[in-house]
Image 1 (cartoon, helix red, strand yellow):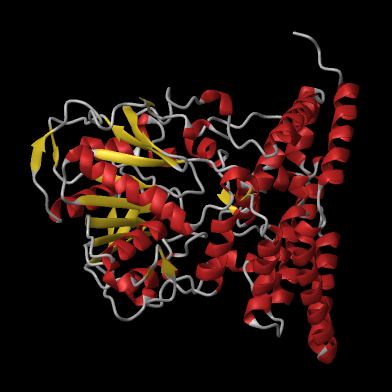
Image 2 (cartoon, rainbow, N blue to C red):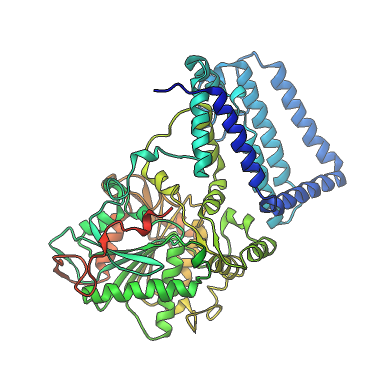
Length: 571
């Protein structure tokens, strides 16, 4: 193997870094930086109106820092600043064993506590305070001593032991990630679509310019006569629901005796930039429903959808109901917002000013890049989804281990400009979906109250994208019989909780009518995966067993290509 030339690597790094910053548009962050600066200016101005409280805060901070300094070489005291539970940045024993690094850690934590405390105690209005807290946390997280080679004892130890090879390896990985335009979160070479991920046997049996419809090969001798149509988010690849064999939701559905179809959305390019929410129904969900019914001969089908796919499923059912069509026997929603009154931390990116900025930028069409959307979501958990990999990949020079969910997470998808801006304004900003007739789609007013099939509504207690208390409100918007279930963990792991592993827990049967907190207090905690609970619920909604089809598709809907199809391969 040819030996790596460190000087050449550094020169390439400098050249690429220069190009990256040259191409970076200041307008992308101008609005956020302006709001952050204005908010902190307000905090400081208000502090001057009450200087005693401000002086007390600053004096206490400097006293804590002084005490920390003079006690640097003494054993840590009980009052020492410590990371919050779950903060893995300082978990290594080196942070305790080295007096210098223990001092750096505690000094940083004291500073972080002071800054976040000043925001928390400030007289800012709720919306401004929320934005300032978010941006302050981004600054605080970025400045952690764990993120710099010279102040991270784990990196220094690795550097000494490897004689600097970790930094060489890290630079190589950094250059590769520059070319990709994203941080590598997993060993991507370990996965191949159709081989060990998205590998459940099936075929594409219908396609148009927006999606491919995949019909999976049944795995039981008999199937429910009501086929299952899965509508994944159009901003993600479908195979989050068909990962490795041991944690594939699609495979689980097949094993329980379902005839399963899934929509594989196309990753839109500039040519599709004018596609609207209407188009995603008229050219997406509607033809998918028709194809499933014609292939199976079913009068009714069961629908399953996730996140924005769930919002799309709800609008699909409501629009069809307004046209006196009711093809769904049941609807399952995973971590779905219908009421957008409180989108959690995402609200910092969504106000009139920022939405107008997006509308102006995208008014000529095109797409909202998937990589930019992925970065936005990663910023909500920057320590885990950004800085953790910066340290591991670039400073320690290690290749992250293979993990199918993170492979999928890195496989981002664009949103069309027309759909993205409409979605932001009508749902997130103005919350019109919950108003009967508040929006019009496909020529009819949308009323979610017209959804009358039984619904299963799954939320996740640590979800930071679709906060569970907001999805709880969303579930109450529905007038149909609704089973609300709260899973453990977050937006992804709360859904992908395989029954064969039987991990975590979920909550059911809480008392409704008194708010989300009361529901949880009165709910029953059940150990294990919610998948089996959902399967029991689905079977309870009706349907009968019929012989499984001998082949996928029909003569009218022949196999176009084997699953996972070609649309999912486009990056």
